[in-house]
Length: 316
Image (tube, rainbow, N blue to C red; front, side):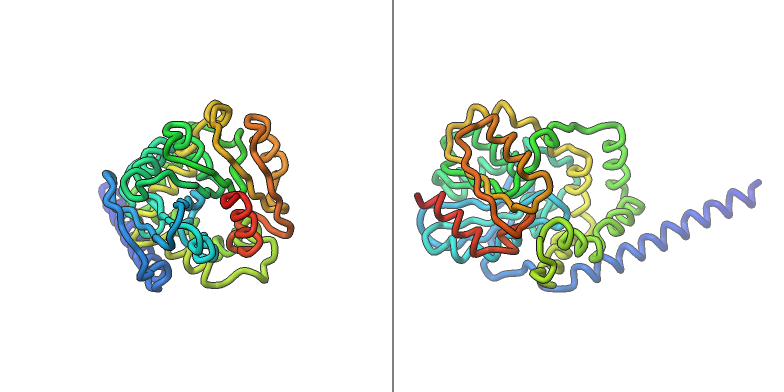
């Protein structure tokens, strides 16, 4: 019995060591490139960590808020920043836990991000700002606008998340999965399996882009960098995201907002017409524009068409 116990301890220790080595190798491979490193990068010292952002142009300010999915960062707007900055002061941020911003081991919630957006507008932009938000981050923009309507001007939502999906709260299963992902060795190993290049490339082909021929290898590598920089800490935001901790019910806030809102939707985005219909039901002043031959990231795949619609709305 004693021999079996010693063998079990040795095998467990050996397995943990092997997994740790694999984790280190995976991380070094994914973070060795210089993607996301730009001379324009600036940092805002927020209460929970440093927030990386890019500022370009002059004029009325626009704040760009990226999606919350794995590998997301301010990079997703890089093809429209220069065009927007011709007439506007543009800020593209990496939210806490994403991109090149700090990634503390905390539970990331909608409320945390709402507080950050309000603080960033007040302390960095220092003027009422237009907001352009993608996917799951739309809920952050809605709640920030509702909590501090004087901080926000126009809002543009790019393929917002379905309202009823946002109503889902953490369950026993999602809480357990978050707990598992947050563990030092096994959780990191699982995260590395879920964030491999092949899977991110698959998301680009099946979810993000309509035409796979439009996918640039640089896009995939930049998402890889964002998902793994600087070490394993990227998994904490991901575990909160998959655990449904970032979700919140926005129906009440959406009803009460009096700001100008436009939705830009990829016509090939899954269930987008139903999603747009739900948003319009709770706020019938919302304008909607559909972009043909586009899915979740039209600002990456069809940047010229996306810019055209954004300018028509914001510059009116």
